[in-house]
Picture (cartoon, rainbow over the protein chains, first blue to last red):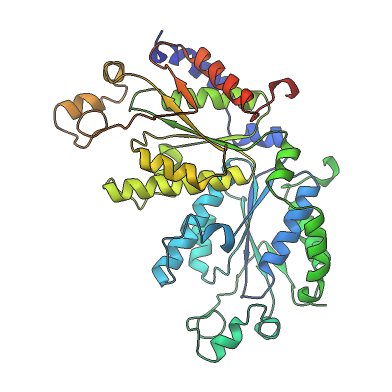
Length: 209
Length: 209
């Protein structure tokens, strides 16, 4: 018997039990979403996103964190740091996050992503309500004081150019879904703030987990 | 209080509860894997992969199917069909599948992927035992007889060139993890064959689901 002769039956089963977003959401008791962390270098994007992911996973949610470590060395390894390549980098991360959200995950991303147009490009890839811009709102002064990787120092010395906040602009989010005062509050409080927002938006339901 | 001052505590928590592959596998009671379906156009890759995904999802496994529909119009929309672009297409799908497997999913992919070197490139991206080459082993005669998209007819008429099986080579897998006689067996039997293989390899445990 050939596959072709079975295709009709198979399609009926398929329509009865579509393996789509709704099916997965029911199976997993969570609504997929993309939490797009944006902010200056040293603002605390990876730290807060990592702590939030940790907390969500402990609550039983299925998450995935995309950051420079797992993207730049793999999917985007062919890209450099020209304006065009940076834009393509954000586009691919957006498409990747979209597919992972389609698979039912709560996706967290941690990239400076300084341009409004690029963040909006990703927002438009996703269904209404699924993209949450999370502004890790730490002042340049605080970031420069922390300077965890010594990059601000290099940028001030002119050893690095085109560095966001120094000689390249960071376009502040105008209406972020979540605005984190990450220069003033501790991590635990910031994570709580995110959980409250996610709960209010129906993405998680802490009572059932 | 700044984030920096909290980082140390956070890192301790992080190490106690690493959100890694093992953690996810335990949470989800499944081992991540990439089932890489390969075969001629019309061999039945998408049909068998779709039916298997349907079955796995009904058993409660968390899966995702990557195919031309959700990849070519998104992540790989900038790529054409030159040899170089086809290779980059497979590379990106491989990196994408790797990240999804890292997120804990059983990933199914359905692409002709005619070249051994490209399939091996993807195999090498993944940890030992996580990449399963699934050869949808249907003869050219049968595929051409089915010709579901009328592409063989066009290729024979010279309206399409560089078409796998006609004027471009399909390099048969030498040691595929799963070899599906998809020209001779019906879909249900092929799906059962896959389930048996996945079970024997410890990727799924039907008894616990």
